[in-house]
Amino acid sequence: MESNLARPYGDTPSRPHDSRLVFWSAQSDDLLFPADTEEIVFQCRAGLRAVSLDWDLCRNRFRSSFQQGRAEAIPGNRFVIRIPTGALKPGFYDIHVSLDSGKEERIPGICTFGYAVDRMPITDTRPDDFMEFWKRGLEALKQVPLNPQLGEVQVFEGDEIDRYNLEEAALPGDYDPEGHRAETVESRKLTFDGIGGKRIHGWLAKPEGEGPFPAMLVLPGAGFDARPRPLEHARHGYLALDIQIHGQDVDLEEYPRLPGYYDERIYEPVEDYYFYDVYLNVVQAINYLASRPDVDTSRIVVVGGSQGGRLSLVAAALDKRVVAAVPAIPHSGDVAYLKWYESANDRKLAYSGARDGMDRDGPPVLQDTPEGRCLPYFDPVNFAPEIECPVFMNGGLIDPVSYVSGVWAVYERLGSKDKTMIPLPGLGHDWTPEFDRLAWRWLDHQLSE
Image (cartoon, rainbow, N blue to C red):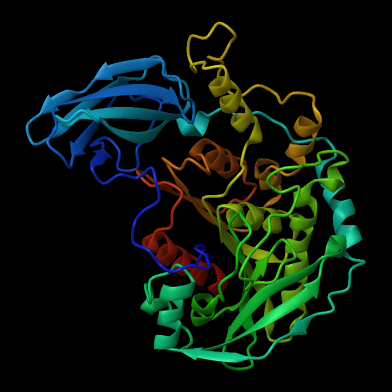
């Protein structure tokens, strides 16, 4: 449900996943190890003839290593890596490996694991006026009428939905037949007014009939792109809305990058930061869903991957009408950790043993700069304590975009008493059908209650 990309489906996992090097541990299927583990033992199977395997150990996303070694070779192109935990502090770690297959070029690989992650230190960056700031924004949003406009209805059913998934929505044709609640769905364009003078565009899809239906807001990943119709979401029984957060139409041939998103960023005043309008317009999308007579307003959920995972967390924090959230591989969590490893990598410092204190337990406080003062107002870690609804989320352990340390910090800070984390060992910034199937069943359970 969270894989919402307007492109054909492909079966190749995202990098840095590499099927030539497969890691596992008999001690833990999910590669999360408790604090009382004295030695962590991994095996790596090479999909090539293998002469030797060297490894380096780094804190998650740090480039400089603080331990190195050569793996023990065993017959069958397999290797054993042993990590004593005496020098480890709670958190996530990357094992970078280099395989000698007998040719001149060595094969790189990565395995990320967690050690005592429930004790991982998280820097508190939440401003004292955090919720007051966002309450002022929500009050301003109340002054913006929706003025919705709907396009012509197009009907899809059965094989048409399968083909659309494969060709337009980056999904397998039909990966969850048990989840079908409708075989005929209706879809149309939608626009409504948002804050900041923007007109928000989206695709609406719903089961055939009058409802009322549970509603699902599908939030997009990062970038400037077309949006796919949420037909699969409608087939699962939801009145679903997928929005384009930048105020651009959903099916343009070309998408110009708008200033302030990737570059030319404005950090002060905080209200001028690019994501201020984005966050509030996500709430405006919920306002639209709640305004429809065919929506059951007691069953509104939010889902999304990457940036969409981040936005689904924000939506659940700012709008208590959200009764469940599925934030997959949420991006930009724990900006203090992000700035910590970026600084270390710029200075080529390792996590442990650096004279400037880089071996500290956790990230330092953010610098007192416009960026350092602005970003905590937008960090999902600081929205997490406000989330009371049930949350079902995941994190790719080798994800180079939504780094697992930040994802886990969000999870640990959630205010919800009903929260589930699905770790994805060996997976990068990616989608997995089985997580989606689990999430569909989880939502069925939540909405039935």
